[in-house]
Picture 1 (tube, rainbow, N blue to C red):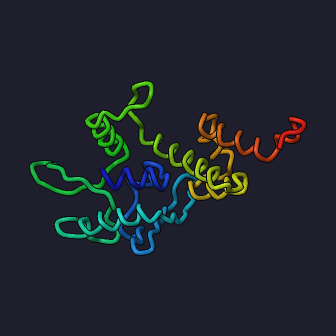
Picture 2 (cartoon, rainbow, N blue to C red):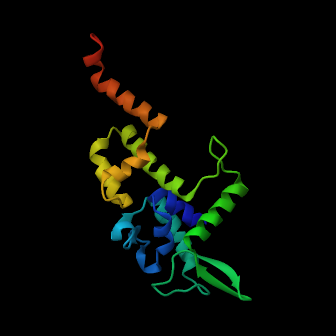
Picture 3 (cartoon, rainbow, N blue to C red):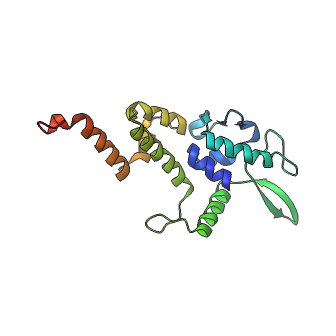
Length: 192
């Protein structure tokens, strides 16, 4: 579950993209994931942050040992189960991953301000919002970065990405501060 949370939160993956990842899709040295034919049959390469790369390498040190399936087509994420009286390792399915994460969040008492448990897609939303906040704080050109974010997240256009970027007080405050810094003199005579 740890690597699932790391990849969902730091790479903004869709649940289905994560559960379909195979060992051959992972380049842990360079910290890149190959997302094959995801939504709209689009494939893309996802570079990971240094911290996510380190977590992935640590996970793979354990994952690429027996008794796990070591074939290149084996799933990256797998879970232990006792199917039909035999202990074995199986790929996660989307609902199984969501259920496992929910159980983990329940045990850890992770809740939002309204008392709700986070959903898998909430981590993708957090990824998009955090990217936007980071660009504002770094003084980056957010409009120039939005198409990059759309490409990274596997969207066909920035319109799909904008779905994640609805009114958020933290982003609004950063945008307002930037606007004030650059344009307050146009609105308020004598302001600098």
